[in-house]
Amino acid sequence: MHKKLTITVDEAVYDGLYKTIGPRKISRFVQELVRPYVVRPDLDSAYAEMALDNKRENEALEWAEATFKDIASEKT
Image (cartoon, rainbow, N blue to C red; front, side):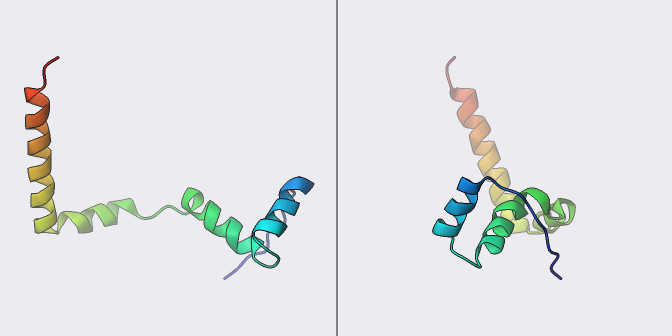
């Protein structure tokens, strides 16, 4: 479902959007630009699903252990 939203922008911003993005494409451009900031994924379920992937978890553990070894051998 779509909702109509009226916003006010500076004339130069509007002209730039119209010239750069094109007519009848501004709404989609703004939506795609704003979406990551306002529509949050369900991270708890995503992390739980990732944790069920044993191969991925083992690779992550190996990477983490190798990183700790690298840090331990660094001279300060």
